[in-house]
Length: 128
Image (cartoon, rainbow, N blue to C red; front, side, top):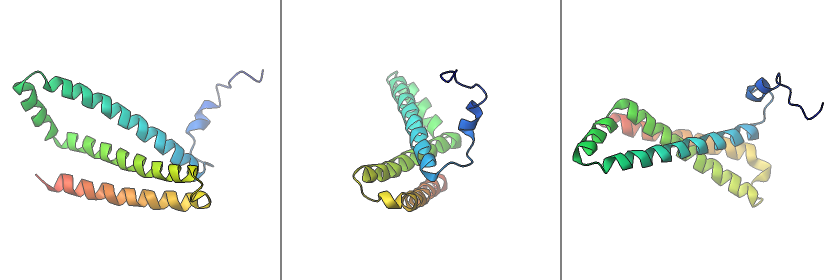
């Protein structure tokens, strides 16, 4: 039965071996998009809670000063930077620009992303 999915093959989807760099770029773009969408929903819920008054606002401010919350903010920044730079690469490729240099473009943009994320991490965690 060729239309029946083989239940033993699903773990291969998670196997990173023999995957191209383009596949990782594709997966990275989708994962960061999902993360940013989840963040947007959580952000809207948090803003709705702030409409409850001054006590809710004070509680929110106390929450955002927590180092764990700062780590979450850093993850949002990382997702935004990675998604944005990878999106630029994809858009350029859609117009036929840099198609033959996709691998080097991806690596270069991800190195830039790492630099930006480290910069933000330093700024966020070095300030009180």
